[in-house]
Length: 88
Image (cartoon, rainbow, N blue to C red; front, side):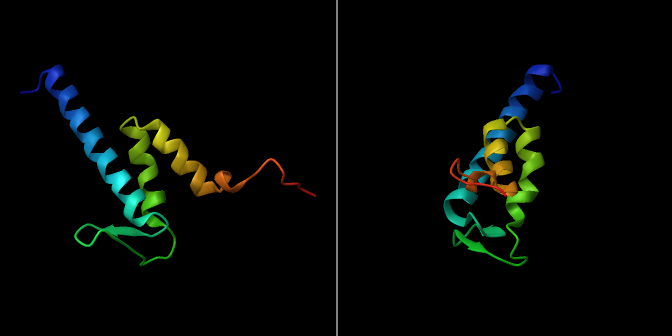
């Protein structure tokens, strides 16, 4: 059916599927381009952390804003900054 309730329940299922996939990537393949699902190993074909960048819009659109913020910070390198750093 196409009732608002059924759309909402489907959206929640999609969000959970994205969340599960994202955390599997983080656990088994963070820093790599892709996760090989059968071997649960990271795989590099671009050597550019492709999944990290490719996932940003999806994380945001499904409402996983904490995950999006952490991934965006990692993508732009904010996570590597420290308060003891100095710029000149």
